[in-house]
Length: 418
Ligand code: ASP
Ligand code: MG
Image 1 (cartoon, rainbow, N blue to C red):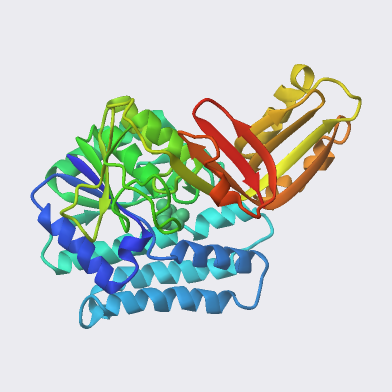
Image 2 (image 1 turned 30 degrees about the horizontal axis):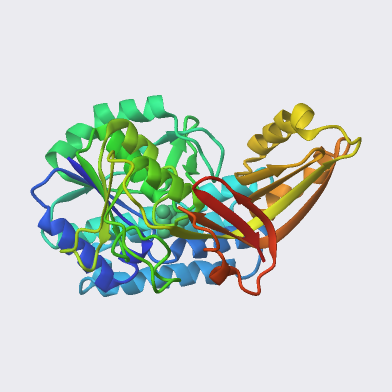
């Protein structure tokens, strides 16, 4: 039993969807679970829609229309008389349109987000499943929310592993044994029955959760690049493909921001020793990258840029030592607010950390800490991480940049700059 994951870029047009169908067709006799993301940039458009609905902005209808037309064009590119086939997609659009009139008095922004944004994946998988069936490939559409059980931290939900594992093992496995299953990445459902999402780019993680529950033999993430590189090949022309990498190394690269794999993806696979292939959906004959237990492989120096970073600067007001007295408090607040920390640095009475820039989360920081610290937030920085660092390797990336913070360890060097 294998798990395939197709991201937004692999299904961004009618032609792209046909290519995905071809790949599935080649595996139509295997037992296979196929996880698919929203098409192209749909999730971004849906985020704009959430914003517009929440602010009762006039353009909510036009954003909705734009999303609908984008998908209609894809469907029209797949089969003739597409409306005859895709009536279930039409139903989803009716449901989505109803969300434009959501009663806003007692719903938070993130709850509304998790009501609206999952439509990207629901629609995309319906289109693909319908097209596969119309092309004579028998597959079954499954709602991932019936299996991926989460808490209710909307927009960043955590998986309830116990419930999820049990449902996948008991209820999903027998289905995948009989038929290829097509399902969504990124989405889940809370125990109260509300839709949730796992964080942006969370579909890789979904694939790995399913693989874990199914005891899959492998996971393949099909990408628009040839595999995992030592830098983003779209940004750095000289990037090299890494043919093989250990689970632990992959977790570290993903953590530092190598965008090719979602950071949480590797851990469940590592636990069950399920190999992960990252390969191109275009040049399918190439073997891409294998992520597996084999650690301590020689890796080239890796260059990772992480955008949209904020610097939070804390200083104790009474000049008390920060480490001894205050760390627990600060981290408790971060955890409650869902702030994810990428780097920390402290001196006697100050503490600085680099976090993903989400201004909404920082709004109340000064107020929360006002008795103990002064807090300064500066944003729109970038973080450069060089893994397997050699002296001076940063220079060519940081010419004429202002470095705000730097930190080196034995293997890694990090630089925050703007
Ligand atoms: N569609 C979601 C996103 O764009 C999840 C994913 O693509 O992995 O963030
Ligand atoms: Mg995506």
